[in-house]
Length: 215
Length: 215
Image (tube, rainbow over all chains, first blue to last red; front, side, top):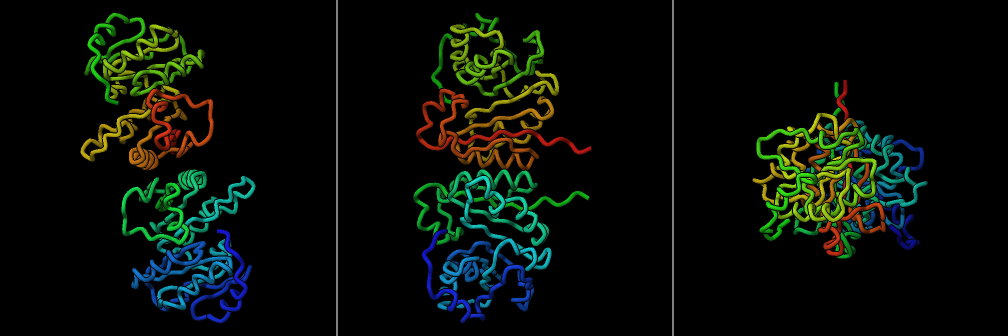
């Protein structure tokens, strides 16, 4: 997502440690400790302006939610939603997704959400795609056994790539839609991006879990 | 595919045993014996009017091809193409796809093609879909190790179903396109149906091979 620079973003983020934490590059912080209970944990990676995860958290008060986003000028919009409508079961975290395996307990996450992630279309940027196998290694480590990855995008070639990457890695497909908006589905929570572009072409979605190791 | 009845179809089929053979219900016939050589073998199941397999056979004289179709009034159109332009490496076979495992040697087929198969959308007809697991059992038996299934359809929900069925069964994805005609690809051979409907919505395609058993 491209967003114009928000001049006051950094200042605002630093002013609200009760809603948002920053994990510096190379820093290790155990984000599970943000919550004092053991409710199911849902993590959105690349949470953008936060509409999806804020709606999720609001709908599911008995679950905990963490929204990870790297860019000040984007996550500040999520922060503004949280300031307007604070939720005890939602934290924002400004950090690079590369570091997630250093910041969560193993087998501690129930679901990971990847919504309209940057497709990084150039082949030389493959390693940056959030469905690249090195990222799947991290997700597998952090998800509970049977935990889910929900992946949604409007980018056809990125979806094709991701589907191949998942299947090659070894997953079970729990749900698959090649046109999320072909049917009315009140359970589908939209991001700001999805709301804006859903009529321009299909939105693709897949929900997978990793295959258990054979022992 | 719905096709009006062709009154002379049966008669014409019976008049050309040099191009087309009929396998009656419950009959066993070894179709590999249609060819006297050991060239790679490609089989289209539900060949319709035959444009796809006739073009394939023409382009690949060093490979053998068998087109299976159940309906007289459809396969007679394929027969007419073969009468106009006979090819030594193409046979038509009128039979029910249910019987294929009785009519080929095990591990004898290089590729199986499923083009715009009947989606059988009703849940109670799932077992008739050519990507139902019982059919996958048959394909696995008949394909050489590493042999390919190419599946193409314009039916979104049938593609979603088939993709899940393949992945659940255990396959490697060799190629995947959620919009075959988004890019110009001279290698894509079209069926009559595809030619007619390609501008009405995306054509979906996947090429898979079965995972080898772990020993």
